[in-house]
Length: 294
Image (cartoon, rainbow, N blue to C red; front, side, top):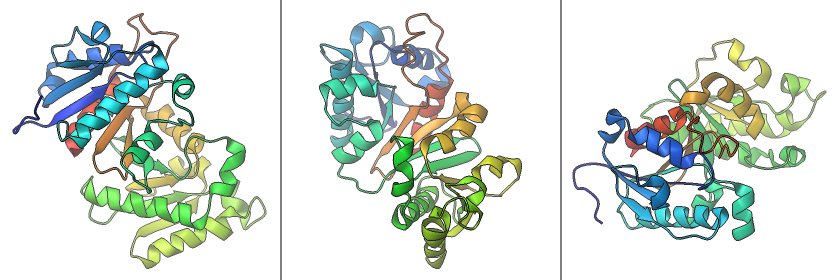
């Protein structure tokens, strides 16, 4: 199987075979405007994906966790081999995968390790917003100690370079959120802003990056800050408002990888799998963004 010399090729991994991944993939590829974007390679279970007119790489597996990783490994192989230009990943279950592959924390970290990338972020993209996270999938009690000047600066810097190189924004304006309520109230409600976040913003400004903040997260969307990107401190801080406002068209994009990887923002939704109830909107948006950026 060789990559088309004319059209961009996107590989799509099926994710957890028990979940809604197969359904949202098939529903997305039923749309003529999606098929017209370029070439596709589907990776997973042919019994679940065979209704699509796109080529399917059938991967044998014993259980959901094993299958999810094997599908992903094949996608990585296609990217490294130059067969596919971009990767779209349907959702998997971290718990199921962790029983097959110890210390698995998610697609993002697994892909970064596979390509030996040290600086990377989860970035969430919709038509008018881009938000990245300083910390990702970790218990809330562990977040404060991970909010260091270097970690915040790294996220600001990566947001800046990604907006320039991937999204074509010449002078990105970046808003940085606080960790604590009311941006810490000058240390009364927490010291991370004064000790870590503000110094990181100042370091970014010294490098010519248009970063401002820290802004209190609870009121940020009440006012127009005129920014191109947002750096949030932790998972639910950033994703609770975004999923509430943009869920159907929100896409998870991995910043920092040497190729384009996107995914829908929903999970496996095991409770509705196989019932033809899954909304493919986020998968459609993920596919569209993959072609746009590849």
